Structures are given as structure tokens and as C-alpha cells.
Image (cartoon, rainbow, N blue to C red; front, side, top):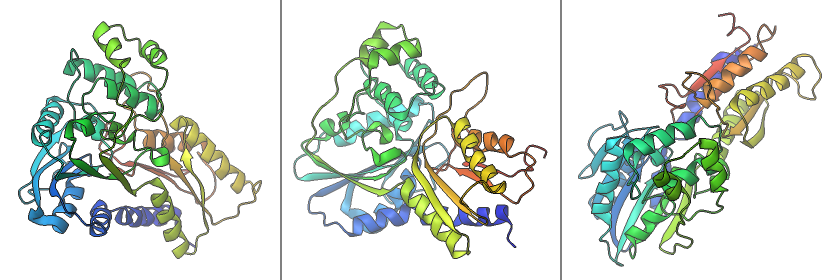
Length: 368
């Protein structure tokens, strides 16, 4: 017999180890030959780890370098690299300061220069230069509304890009004529690089109906509404993007480690996209079908779901999609007389504006 909760916690640690951003960056850089003058910019919650790996591979071959990560996520000095910490998930003054420093460092590059751009989840908030007429307070208020709106990431980022001068491919235009090699840890469905960190070096793939977004967010300030409806770059030619990790790899890692323990594992989907509350109820329904022997699946069994759920915040709650999914499932499987466990994990290490990465629940959680 095995204990599902104990085994799940063990697999979580193994998956986190497999998703080590330093290893992924080293593997990617070691496959490349760089012939130009190198510079480096890293943004996101994994920026310190990614930059540290780049320094171990390239060392002093990198000239100018800037690392921008979340407050509390720097782990110390990295050679001669400049390191800044900024606000996430709500941008702050240091987010603006970091964005301006990036422009100062990299806007004067030439054709014989190359920028290594390391991007991970959280970059949208950490790296910012505001569009004319937009204030930090404007950005913070709109970001807060977006976070609790229940909108998908494409609509959220369509707004972020237009309030910014460095998102939606605009930073690539600033760096030109230098070339950019972007190495990206994807935290969005389908690995759309236009939506990862709001696509600082990638043009928008599909533009949502902006007037509908403005109406839903109840935005009335003319400076904000006009900015949101402006055009962004359509074509960018100085960028090469490589996805070095994503949710598919996370799901495959979990499957591998459960099967090594003799537990059959099935990846149900890597593109789950709905309300977090509904996802928890859906997964709980599958669990109950298995328990009541109304499913083709037998026990023991591991079911794996990857994706990006949404939270529509009510009242004064914080949000956090993984904890909401887990709590919703816990209510639905409350009192079930079986050994089962559900864990919901944010691969970027932070679940919404909280200090947790997710949640773990069993049929005993509600009672406890």
C-alpha cells in the first residue's frame, strides 16, 4: 500500500528539480555559437537563476548585463551583472526604474551586438516603461482590475502592452539594429511567446476586441482608453526565440516519476483553461467516478492536468488559481472514503499574490 499524499509530495519535489531553470539555460546556451559582442537582460521570477546559469557558461564574455526579478528572489551577486528587484504581481516604482535602466543600457547597441534575453513568468510586472500620459497609479489600478476580472491572459496582456513602451514587441525595436536571442520559460498555454511576459520582443499574434475590454474593466480615463486602443508593432526581424521549458515538460516529468513508483499515470490535457473553481469541481467529478467504479480508470491511478486556469475574484479574497482549484476540489470530495490526493502547483513558484506555490488537498481537508 502507498500513501497518496506522501507520494504526491515526493513527486512534487522531483518535478521541481526537473524544472530547474539553471539546467535548462545551460543546455540551451551550450548548443549555440555566439560571434557578436554579447549583452544580457533577464526578467521574471526565475531571472536570477537563469542569469546565474548564463554567467557560468559565458562568464566575462558578457559585457553589459541586467537582471530584474521579484522582491526577495535575488540570491546574491552574479559576477559583474547588475541585479534589481521589483514589484510583482502589481508593478511598483522599481519596476519602472528597472525598465528605464534596461533602455539606458541596451538602446544604443549596434549591428555587431547581440542581446541574450532570458524571460520567465512575472516579467510583465517587473519590467516597465509607461506610455505617455500613463502614471504608475494608473497602471497599478488597471493591473488590479485585470487580475480579478477573470479575463484570459491574451486579453490581460493586450491591455498591459498598450500601457507600456517595452511590451508587445516594442523593446525589440528599441534594441535594433542589434540582434536578440531570447530564451524563454513558458508559463502560458500553447507557448505563445507574444503572451509570455507580455511579449517584449514579439509582435501580437491576435488582437482582442479592445473596446469590449475597456467596457468590461469600466475604464473611463481618456488617457488610459486611448492608450489601450493604439497600434503595436506588426513585424519584428531582429529576434530569435527559443522555448526552453513549458507546462508540457512539467506534466511529462510528473508522469515519469509516478510511473517509476509503479503508479499508472495519464496526462489528461496540457491545455486546461477555465475558471479555477470549475476545474477543481471537474477533476473531483472524475475522482468520484473512479471511486464509484463508473469509470474505465482503475486504482491506483494518477491523472495529470496542465494549463492555465482563471480566477474571478469576489469580495476581499486574494485569489491564487492553484489554491482556489485545490479548495474547490476539496469541497467536492469531502468525506470520500478513499486514499486520494490532489495537488495544484504553479510552476513559476508563486500562486497569485501569495507566498505559496499552490495547494494539496485530500477528502479530509474540509473537516481538518
